[in-house]
Length: 250
Picture: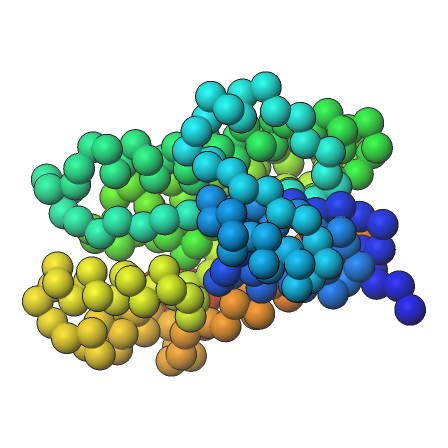
């Protein structure tokens, strides 16, 4: 039996591990031919082989290399991201620039490269893995929060322009997901706040959600797969929280 995305081509950035890998796996399970894009060339190649896809080793902060790119894909998932935790007065400008380049400018360039083909075929699904921090702010994450708020606006503009051409654009806004990036944040937050890592998890990461656990990558991936399906053809310009009730209660 063919899946709901049979015959579709998908590109997922930051897909060698974590949330991106879960999304790539879910899209492949639904029948899509998936390109695993990641700066980790070996990791991307290994995971692509596991899901029967292809790999693309790419540094998305090298925006000059993306300026004249053409992407022939039906589905584009912007997932690649990094984090840096620091008070504003100590936040290194290089880090701020790098985060915005990777998480705002690169999605713009990839979307720009993919839209002509999507318009020609009359179909496209663009999904931004945003965050609760695209809707809310937390201290010490100035670059990340700024980038995610920027992505929210860019997604809505893409929805407005792409709608007449059969292209949808949406954001998925998870809270804290059980990934290596979050594990790294726990250690950084412990250092910034001067508390233990267990206290960071309990008092910071799980303070907002009413469901007191980290989110599984597969839960994010399931929502992305639905947004990429024909069932979500009328869903565009939206932001879907998957945060255990965090934004409902703050």
